Image (cartoon, rainbow, N blue to C red; front, side, top):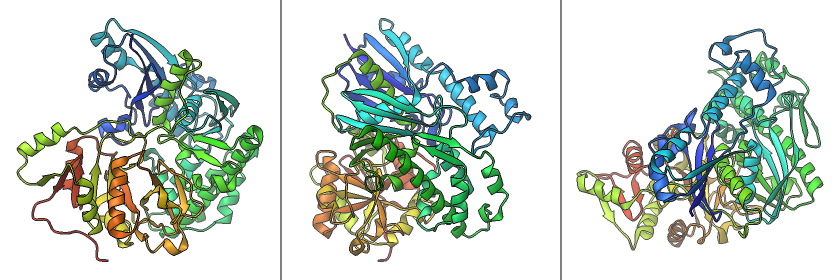
Length: 589
């Protein structure tokens, strides 16, 4: 018998699919946006009809039982069902007037749009997968499971952690009943301590989305990243902080709205209004203040969680766990000593959480020691595709260097070349961790503008991450603690900031990735070779994409970005590719 658990994250944004075998081992996990090359894959099914046969053949050969697990309860909350019955969750319904403004930083039509999209995603969950299973594996028994949304977040965080026991916080935009859930994790079991409930419950995720909007960015595109990058250029706007703080009341785990129209008042004040001709300083102050407010509020919640559980380990998930600027402060601002954030803490990660919950429902006492989950769970670019490209290529220079690819690439990086680096299986989650990365020399400040201008085509205030060898990291970072998934921002030692200027943000911080040989041997070897040449044990690392697009998925995606940007070198597996009549685009240093 071959039994598999297929988790579907059916959130209308950042959908994903994960596969776990009958022993609880993760076989595959990937966000839908990668296959579609459609950022966030809004309103796209995780079980893409034409992709499924390939995935099932590769990861679920000859299945006799499959459990399809989803990350939302099919039974919907009362308010959602009510407004749906009144027609507000339709296209004409979004235009309807006469319903009271919800106690939320977002407008009713925005919230109702999210509910409508989510409702549609839940109703169609698994349709494509069942159709393909019936067609290819008619003898296979199929069962279904649906789980509380925040519980799937918690499962992803805890089951992927190295902890035997931990406190767990899920801080999100919204779930079935509220925006947060708090749990105790022990002996592979999750016990819910508290869940925020009710439409008057405050959502820190929605607050951050509104702050993103006030700064002039688009939260629907996931541009909260920009707020974190821009915040480092600002300073505290006390009036804005006071206005934010006046809208929320915190009591233990309780987080409730006090004022429902604060953001409407703010939108009418010129001091808080973003205009196209405003200097960036205004948006920077809003971003900085919003980040401070978020950090202070989460600190209060986590401090209470520690007092309730008495546990030193924290597993953190939900969309707000992507706030790396705050994540690096948790161990100094709270009593938690170790913090684990999964590589996919947002809704894409819920595919894995749903599959794990289904597995643990059938295996009450699984014999699986706690261990840190590898993030390299996605698709590969096979050598066969590269060899086919070589057969028809008549322009690019291609070298096959199976014994020296790290040495050759490190030498080019040390010369200032910009390298796209593609190896093995893709990362699960939003961050490039050395398998779908653009890499550069970390030493020269001018490299930041060079990459933003000529490769990423994005704003100059956006920072880049340092990928650093673990054994050298404490030499560069204050209060160093491991950050395996590029999930924490730490302060770089004052005397080291000019040494690694390309990865040092304006406030002296870097969102680091810890690199160990046992986690990613080839990426480790590359940085080690660079260290031997430069005496600097870190590289600048950013995702292999251009702004507004997901990480590359296929060889064709990689070549498209390589040929239409200022990248100098493309490395895929053991193949090193350069452009004809090569002219260096390195910045002057």
